[in-house]
Image (cartoon, rainbow, N blue to C red):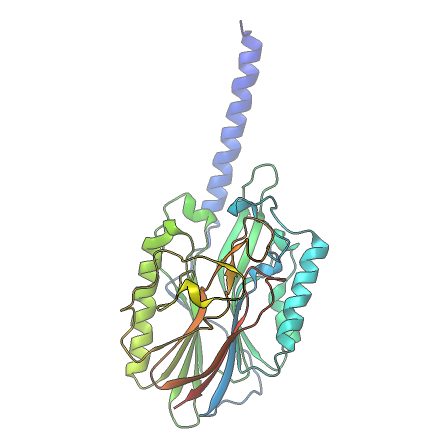
Length: 354
């Protein structure tokens, strides 16, 4: 029989746990990152060219996986074993990503996703400042899309504080930079610990009198996010079509977390195990004339349930570009890194403004 004292201690302990949980939820609610639908991003004062040449341009998009999802990582949220990489391994991935980008000559635009500004998973290292310091000849635009004071899971070793977002680097002076918020379908309290996704739109003058619009996007992931994915695509569709109707050039790139239209598993023949993500982007997402630009020969993303093993780890294509009809795709290629530094491989494209 349980004594009154034991029962009292058990109830007191349970009450203390409930009080801590309640206070934690209240604190997280009041400090919740809730961006508005549109937010201007401060444009730095630089001496960069204020006009984009009406010719060929080269861009790269890369979800760098906060430099913490290299080939050796199996992430606990994806049924893996690790919450975060060891610090030495994190630094190796971070330095590898930066070095890889610096070897690509002088790119016109670099679109990065999952860039940590101050997160415990990456030892509070400010990656945004590191990229700015490395690419001093670029204008940088950073926008948060994941800011949580503490992600409490797993309980024994929680992910902790996360502050991360997307980063656009440009060799030209923008005339506008805006963060757009995607609509969210997550309810309280789950929404407190999930990303507030969005995209960065930057606008540039072109030498022929038109404007170039660059969109850096990072859409929702996972099959349970199908409703949000549909809302996000509808929002992007309206903006892309509106800008093109105004006569502007529009390039949209990033991590879509869905396969591009016309994706087929059997086109990837490099020895990787390939999967298809469902639901895919609807075939009528954009009118005819728009180009879905991706390298069909190589995957851009891998599963992170275990360390990467070619031919055993599932891979797919979810990183790509969409070009408006007044832009020609000259060449698109996926840089083969064997997922050494990130769970994504970078995708580059050379375009020509018609």
